[in-house]
Length: 168
Image 1 (tube, one colour):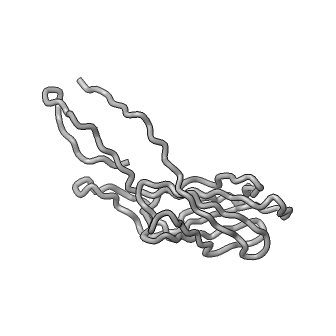
Image 2: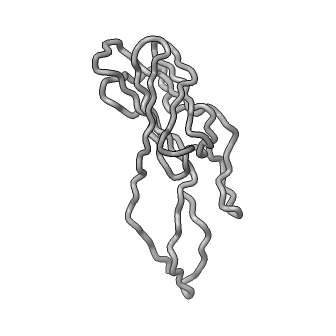
Image 3: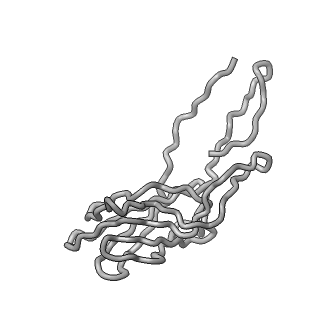
């Protein structure tokens, strides 16, 4: 979360609350396989390609400073892979990155049986990835070589109740 500057003191009450905004995009991944697919699939690693992670904040210009584009691990568990089932389940951890200037992102996925490279996921609801939004990418494993189907959806971030506190 990021908020602009406000100032005041106990003699000069602040009448406007902090206005927070989300400058980042959240990417989460779910995995699933069709119920009729009997092949056992276990995911060892899921990597988001070319993500720019936040590395600092420029308070003067109210901007997030991003590092260079890197591959970001969402799941990295080679010794205890995640079994893919017919029930859609989250995989790994959500990542917060600079919004992509396109509506496509790419993943590398490694299972216990084979690697999948440059798996494309496209969002259709927005022209590009937007700040303040959480996107859930579902990877559907169909079995066989290079057969992952992707789908993207927007997930709401929970909005909490307003709060406050006093300083005397």
